[in-house]
Image (tube, one colour):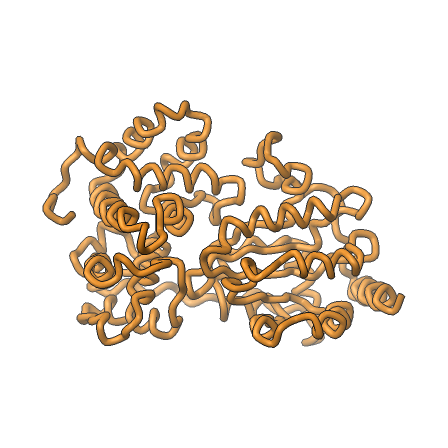
Length: 410
């Protein structure tokens, strides 16, 4: 009863601040790629759980938005838990991050305490081990009380992964905020909180104009600008030293070290990965290079064709993949061919490194392909991972008929 009263106090505080009540209908203009045949369409259509790019360590980010939860009588919370596990199952083999937007949880849509307790028990070591960070945004008295209730059940090690953030701006210190899918209700609530704190709404932040890239820039610029041998260095290092290391590409690395190496590359200075003693560093550098391209390596043009790959007859999918990559610009094709050749070799050693074509696709898919509108939706994961797996497993067939300059690279 005490917990319910605290939740009602939070709602009353929102009302005083003039915050509008949360919409209790499915998100307008929600995920258009969710099919009626989706196994969890009844839950997925509300867009409560979404994929939201990467954090600063290259780990996938999953967001949970309470403001998108409809009233309890319109949402089966058991199905919600199943859908959350279904989503996380695609990432638990790799390091990942969860962002929980608490705003919008109210007496009408909140799950029961017994459901919360059973939900925590459902997430066994498989889910907790590779969860590297859980960010709770806009915590309230309700959250603080819940924390006191569940703290005895939570291990000290897991508790260290939990970080409470009072404002959205604090998220930018930990992940790529521009790629986050933040509900408008949460943004308005954040503005109200800051306005209350300062006595007025904060002015729109003015960003300085972007600096022109260095002549030696390798990250965050187009392939045409950066197409040099240097950014292929990490391929070679991993190939020579880490091809048989279990879980290759699944782990994150020190943010500070990654930024240091990026700076060296961008300044045209040599990088010796032996000095760092961690095979995860060149692996993360490779993914970072791909993720920071202005356009995905596969470009935006074939995005719709890629999403349709699941509707193509199985026997024709390799042919469709070949048609898609044949249309890529020269530089994109050359780097993609080199990358897929390398990943194919990694998959050939899967008996040692446990990284099959399917596992590698889960790691690299969203670093190769994303929507022109920003982060890919959860419903786009299946076709994106499928086409990446095909590119890896059928490398020799897909890339056999088109040659590029510097063909000796692979």
